[in-house]
Length: 66
Image (cartoon, rainbow, N blue to C red; front, side, top):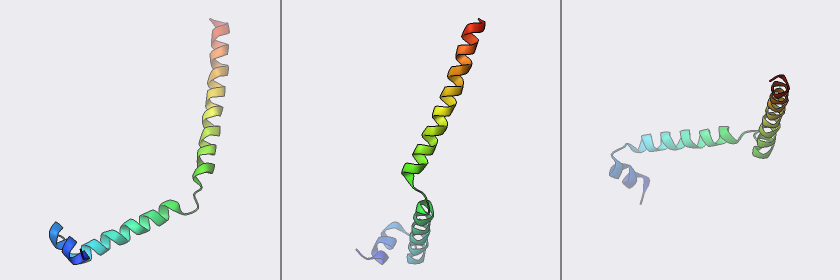
C-alpha cells in the first residue's frame, strides 16, 4: 500500500502522516542522544544501594534505642 492509500483509509491527510512520521523520528533520535542505558542503570543502582545503606543504619540505630 502507498502512503496515500493508508492515509485515505484512516481519514488523514498525507501531509499529516509525514508530519507525524517526522515527529516520531525526531523523538527517537532525541531519546537516544548521549544516553548509555547500562551507565544510567548502574548509576540508579548505586543511588538505590546508598539509600538502602542509609535506611539500614537508621533502622539499626532505632532498634538499639527501642
